[in-house]
Length: 281
Ligand SMILES: [Zn+2]
Ligand SMILES: [Zn+2]
Image 1 (cartoon, rainbow, N blue to C red):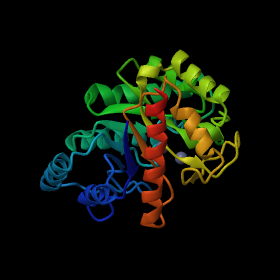
Image 2: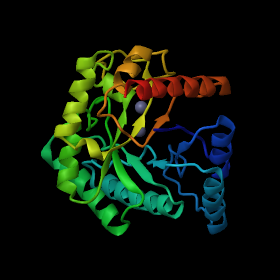
Image 3: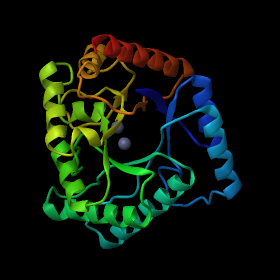
């Protein structure tokens, strides 16, 4: 399992690659646009070439693109839904140009009803038919705050089934804990992985977002913490990683960014968790 971070592209796409090299991680996740704005910054071909070239030379992979925050693929508002679908298409096209392996997106916000899942599925079908993988689009589980879809793997499996195009799964540990899956106990881990097996399927799980949680179990809140410093704790991650069903390609940390020392500590912690897994196998 390769390890990486979500890294900033503020100023330039190359910045994320350089930062990954400084940290010594193997994988990385980026936004390809400002995550909190609709405004589109055109990325030139030389910029794209410089990124793909530097990524190859750095031996980094997988490269994961996270969809920006404003699109809502489940929106009940027609105009908002259309805008969100277009944005997904644009970001997926750019992710493909950048030779990304995956594009992660959240299902969106809407009443928990069949039409909502259908809207998300239709948006995904349209995007993937136009821009087939790679990158493979991954649906991410959520903490289920308010009207957030995707708290349970079953919902993600439902969307994948309705979409009928190749899709995968990204599992965020902090979101799962906020959603009520108690990763600190073998039963909680087995329950979550069992739901994934019965829903989207274990083989669809490609990426883990490896985050501890500042919010308590079942709080439906999404607050990331450094590994071992939140409510999941190291014992929780050990439980998770020692499960033989868990075989993702990479774990990406989206831990708080204050000091670089934090990133190094998180990376060392993650490495120790994975080596425990090796010993356990
Ligand atoms: Zn996410
Ligand atoms: Zn989160």
